[in-house]
Image 1 (tube, helix red, strand yellow):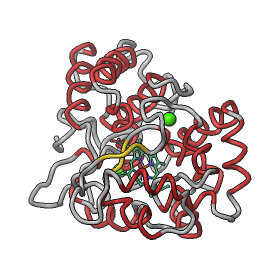
Image 2 (spheres, rainbow, N blue to C red):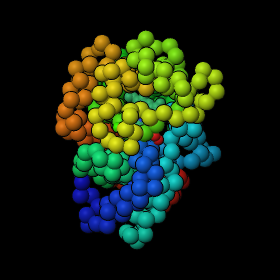
Image 3 (cartoon, rainbow, N blue to C red):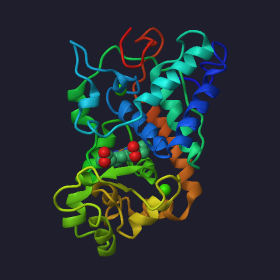
Image 4 (cartoon, helix red, strand yellow):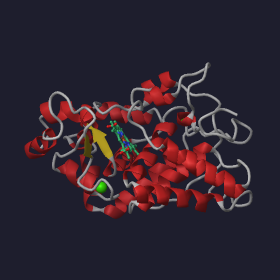
Length: 293
Ligand code: HEM
Ligand SMILES: [Ca+2]
Ligand SMILES: [Ca+2]
């Protein structure tokens, strides 16, 4: 992978992605969060190969139906829009759907006030997908710290990557059904915060009611970490990063030093973006991100 991969073949590609992302985020700020999450959920399942974007066929079931994705991941229409615009400006399909996800994730973070980093490019698209693999490798909201560390380790990511990348939860929203157990049963939670969240997430019903991960869900900042220090993490997996374990110190560091979080987030995004890419003659450049050529 190289940052200059499309310089000669289509120099207009990256500006085109940025334009569509900016328009989508301007229309709905949450879309920036949704696009960031798509890249993460692609990379964790067989590497960053666009597998998440494929719809079901007779030979495989879509990863969109996996536990962590179903009725949860969003933004596929914006990816289609980006793909159409990039193919239009380039004159033919030369940019992979996997690379589109990587660049869209970066441009989303920038659009919401976060750090910028150089995205390595040249990933190619898979010709298959695996719902069952997605089920087994995507981390779940109920994981404790050892489980999270192990989950990230299986992807070649360390504890620092885990904490930095979890900072992605400084943007976006979650559904009541995902965090209900924590706000009613956890002991490592600020009681005032639990009460606040219970108001829009009743014990029964309201499963799809939304709540922000931090008080500034449309702003990429350090509020997520400041919240963890106050036991105001929304998911069990969020608070696990600051609950008397080995990552407490790093959470505190990020909560006080935006620059340290900025630099680490960029580095870890590049590392995540390097997970098992298809390159050279492997895979293909899809014409339609939802279908194998
Ligand atoms: C550490 C393990 C992680 C777990 C257990 C986890 C879990 C979740 C869950 C349960 C949701 C809400 C789903 C819903 O309510 O429908 C969510 C949303 C989100 N996640 Fe994560 N996540 C993790 C790591 C990450 C990473 C590494 C990133 C990106 C770098 C990320 C970015 C996001 C974003 C931006 C949203 C909000 C999406 C939106 O509003 O559409 N997450 N995550
Ligand atoms: Ca993938
Ligand atoms: Ca925020």
